[in-house]
Length: 397
Image 1: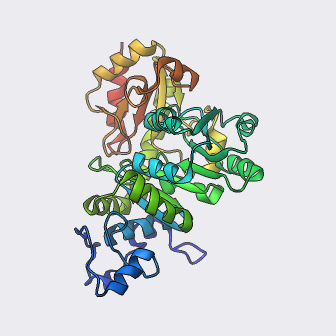
Image 2: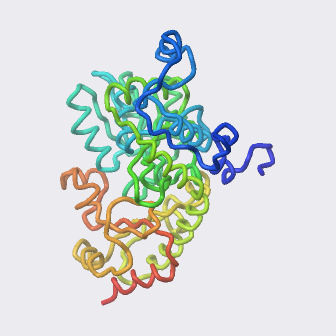
Image 3: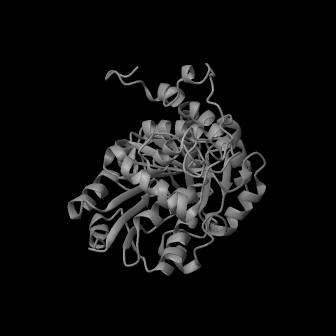
């Protein structure tokens, strides 16, 4: 247990938000497969609809199984409340639809996950919302992008896919000094709350693709947003209920709850494997550059030591032979799976320019720091010697 009498993270990942005594002694939370809820009276129904009474009334808004997951996620991220959604993009879009209106500006880091970039650049712009890009590693450039129209500042760290890192505390401080009303949103998918808790560093909201490490087994699609209770309730009742309908299934919730129980153990292994893989790749004659904050040579190593509890399971690299060498390596792999996504038990590898970030044009990729030869690896849970051996044979002359 922690010294401040708060249960340790690993314990809360298993127990937070659930009491078996309230559920017939069931060790695991029940799965409430219901679309609606019966009321004992008109008055009770009216009270639940208005929010004056506690309780559920329709599973597009809430579900008892979902409520357990949301309580657990809020606890682990050290926020007041959470909302689980049908996908990571469901969490992002429900959040931004709630916070933005025509004429508003979103200030975002220059590098984003492909679908997030597409939603902002090709979606929000259609509705009169300005998207302004800046290099958030350059604090003066980022600060120069703030204006009276700025309502949201949004970024990932580490950044998908090139592993740049952004100082959450510094950016949050700059934004709040300019205006405390601007919402700072951090995508924490790469780290999970095991490694990084942006809300404790000054961010207002955290979004996740729960498809990745939180679920952990490549068998579900889900998302989440965590923050203060008032904002989360607004997102639930407008961004989710009315704008996106990105409602999570109770069965998916159950799988995420199961995954979170082993999250600290899995993240420890992901980090261990990634560290050893990155150290091997850095020394390999076929590799031009490795992007991984656990390497002392990495420009973001010191920030990672301050901001993260470990260095994560994601690696990016460039081969000396460029795009053609990358394709040859990817096609020669035997154990490592060529697949998008990340955070699974299996080690996954992909080519961002033609896969996860293909929604960018070539010019946009160049402008936003995504090279054509970049390769992204999600370190899995296999024996690391086997993963390394597969990489070595795939890069051999």
